[in-house]
Each structure stands twice: as C-alpha cells, then as structure tokens.
Length: 342
Image (cartoon, rainbow, N blue to C red; front, side):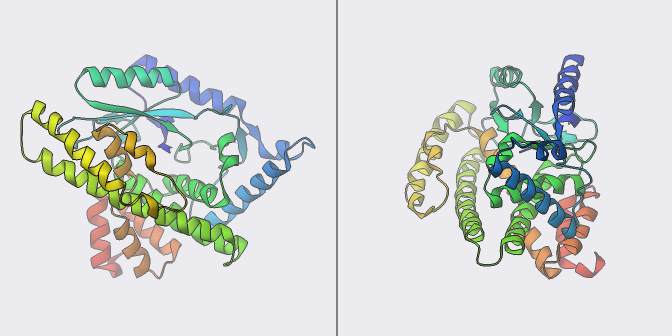
C-alpha cells in the first residue's frame, strides 16, 4: 500500500505532469457507487462487497477515523496495480534513499502511475550503486484531500483483508506525520489490524469464521515479521563490521543463505499465508527496509492502546497528537511513560 502518491511530486516538470495526468485519469473515470448499485447488471457478490465497504466505513467512523466521502466512488484498474513505488538503500548498510516532497515531507519511496517509469527510476538507482526495488501498490491515500475511490481489486479481498485495508488507509487521513514514513505506515498497520478484528466481531459476530481466519492470518504475519527482524539483525551485524564494500557484498550472500535455511525450519508453522517466495529473494536492503517500514514498534502502539482500555478514540487522539510532533516516536514513548499527560 502506497501513501499519498499524488502528493509525492518530483523535482522536475515531467514528474509533476505524470502525477497530475495519472491522478486526473482516476478522478475523471471513477463512478459514483450509487450509480453502480442502481444497475441490474451488477454482480451480486460485488453488490455485497459494496455494502460491506459501507459497513466498514460506518464502523471506522465510530473508532474516530476520518471517513469524509472516501470510498463513495469506484475505479476499475483493469486487473493492474493502481501504481508502483520505487525504494532504494545502499547495499552495505540499512539507510533508505530519501526523496523530499511538499506536504508528504521526506519519504523513502517514490510513486509512479506507470511501471515503465518506475523501472527506469529503479535502474538509475541500481546504476548508481544502490539496492533498489519496484513494488506494486494496491491502494493509496490522498490524505483526505480527494475522495479516494474503491479500486476494483479491493472487491476480491476477504472481509478481514478488506476491513484491514480500508481502516489502514483511513488512518493516513486521520493522523499523518510529515517526513516520518515508518511512523505513518506502522501506525496504519496497527490500527488496520486491530480495527479490522473488532469490525469482524461487531459485524459478523464473535463466532464468525471470518474472525478466526483473520486471527490466523495475523499469527502468520507476526511469525514472519519476527523472522524478518532476525534476518535484518543478522545482516546489520555484518554491516557494522565496517568491511570493504566488496567483502560485505560477498559475505552477505552467505548470511542471507543461512537465513533462508532458518526459514525452512518455520515454514510449516504458517497456516493461512505462504511466504515461500522468500526462498527466491536475492539480498536487497531496499526490500528488507520496505518490509520493516510497515511493522515498526507495534508493541509500543499496543501498549498505549492498552493503557486507554483499547478505546480507539482515545488511542487515536494520542497517536494524532504525536504525529504532530517533531519526533513522533519519542512522543509515543513519553505517552507510554506518562499517559495522564496525553
């Protein structure tokens, strides 16, 4: 999931134009949901999904999330990602390549509506000596400045995944810290996962199989997140040896191969998701940082949420306050230590 792609203008007119045309195409070709629902030709499964999305939006509003008129229109992506994000890092240490943009601030990725443009940017970074990747984007938020449409791919999601995605994106429009992408994405991950579980229980009942499915999915995610944390730590230990670049690149292949071997010892513990694609990965710091960006300090968010008796409105108030500070992570730590001050 990309964040606010329309608000990530580059430093040249060509990039500005590309973003304006891409976002303009979406705005022009989206269709009001009410018009789609009025059609007798609408697929019944899709009709139910549109109704489910409305229920998710109504529930999200009770949590304290900004919904405005988001997801009241529909855009058909024709089976393609809505956009692509480029990210990069030096190959011998973990440090995201950063772009500076208005409104969004400093961010560790750059969005494109056309894959060939993203590929060109990636290839330029690789030629400059960086690890770089292009990732497809299934949805993104314009931070409430536009009414983001439902994308056709979202209609194929399970109820739990759909609720997670929508609540995740609404979080960006509710609490956003300029220049702190790890905070923004990790907060949205936390609120999306916690909020979606609560929605499933509220909407379908505590015994719904959708809830059990979502819980098992979260357990898989947590297991892989812990594994990836260990992988990053293993590579970080190598990088901290201050070896010559050529030696780092040689040794990190061996470190990564050992991580792949470690993965085979846990792969049978996954019940809902298959992460075997990891076995085909090449060492790439940009890919590893991209994963970590969405999963930082989840225990800190949870601690604050528990302090406030898992009341989303109160927790979001704290998270929003911290998003406005120069160092949102330090603010969260202070909020955990002195909750009455927040």
